[in-house]
Length: 489
Image (cartoon, rainbow, N blue to C red):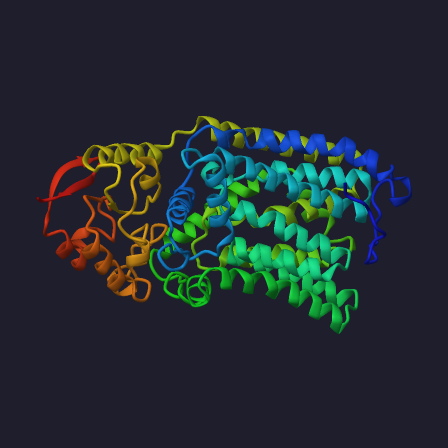
């Protein structure tokens, strides 16, 4: 049960009712927790409606299976992400089996609920009971305000959120060692989670934290990160999570396409925030509410969205907690009717996004399922296969092992998210990837190869090394433009 300590920092406003009008903590949370739990479940209903939402879920599912069969992270199982979420998938598969992502969907519900509860605690401590309820509810309503394949998937950004909110919660209470651990957890979920260190640093400066406090926080960050590096391969951990993504994190190539995606996702999130943006703009620009670190949190999260210049929709999830708190800060100053209007507007917008998630077609999932069916038809259960494309979920849907540690063509060509400009090709691959890929292909040639490029910049016709490797294969079919090759006897 959460307890409420006295505020560590001075705040100008205590909210509409004030701190002295609070109910006992036990009664408050007994009423609020069931409401937030129900709302968390309702807002995640679409996530259970389809077997898989996006390629990131597929990548994680395939990684988890490879790890379960003896693979080593950052050696024979690779990705540009830290290990926490792959380990979570591996653990869920070990307990519940690898045939369904439902256990991970439940974990995502728990992650969203944890974020909402911590936000409610932060807001209540600053502005009173009503503000606490408002922040928790807004967090859950806004969390689905993106394309459903971004908002409903159980991927990295969803599991960043509870760690980042926990870091702010701990900083608000001057629990610096725990704050550092929370920052480390956010980083180990995804590198951009470390952006929460910016508002934490501001909070430390504002409250006059001493050298020992800084050391405690730094130790809290360093301990889990070093432990994760030692539990995998330290050199591989450093390469795959920090130093090996220079070409990927570039704006060069398809600038207009990427910029349009960024503007589109910004507009979608703005629709979800329609209930709180007017109060935030109207009130917080003229009123002092002690929200400097919240604005820094929002700014650092926006910087995390910009990193890499890809602007995928799920990146925008990091904006939700600071937006919910800023909206709460604005609404607790205004009359109650403005609060009711904002929450009802957010509720209506949430309903629209839930309907979108339940009703929108998923053509790429259907394509991956048909390609998976072709793989099952042409390869035996224990034969490795290769899908040359950007849909690693095909391996999981087909229940066939990948012939390579490189689960997408992106790692071998730098193609990602529609980038089809000058920085796509073999020479832009991850360092050493083609040498390793050729060795894997020679040591265990796949029974079936599917060219799922469908005319994109990384196609076989533009990839000389892969064309040479397919000399011993012949085309036997076509699935929605994906060419199926089988090895000649």
